[in-house]
Image 1: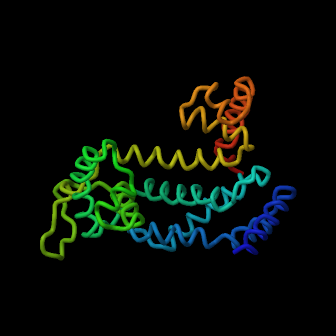
Image 2 (image 1 turned 90 degrees about the vertical axis):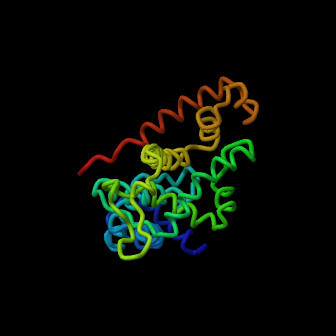
Length: 254
């Protein structure tokens, strides 16, 4: 693993100085495991073939390679994952692919809606995903996969049923997610893209952006936590916003 990380860093350094298809292809091959892992996870919830999702995921990986800035000190894998996942989810949304919801997950999600309200009363706050998973007696990974499947499925007729060949089929209306989940999923994808860009910023600039925009601190509070003056915070925020605008620009088609 360490050798792979070192080789990736070397190739990214070479690619930054002298971009070429040959170097890009080497980076793609070296990091293909990221694409396969994410495509495999999503394919368990999607009607689309794993091979198709994998191909789309490679497009996300290429976008990450094109946009990565080695000087920012961010791990390439952390930067690339949102691009790969976002590319696949965009493909599924545009294609309108149906998401297969396992019967177990249908029951799990129905239980979670009531349990979430009960936990909020007991805990005094909205339960985290980890707290929900513990209360439902499932792993955090399974709960997240369940949530993702429900958020990304294609909405059919409310009278349609699932598991038609098994007894106890349920109407799709009974398993529908909160209508706001679709919007939340879109926000989540954008947040992944934004976080990938923030991770490329220089240390103090990144900290300033996170304090002001993600943690809603005042500039005085941010300055105290980071250990600089409020004027310096202002400069870093202006610099960071400008860099983020540039980083989040869609790639120009060639």
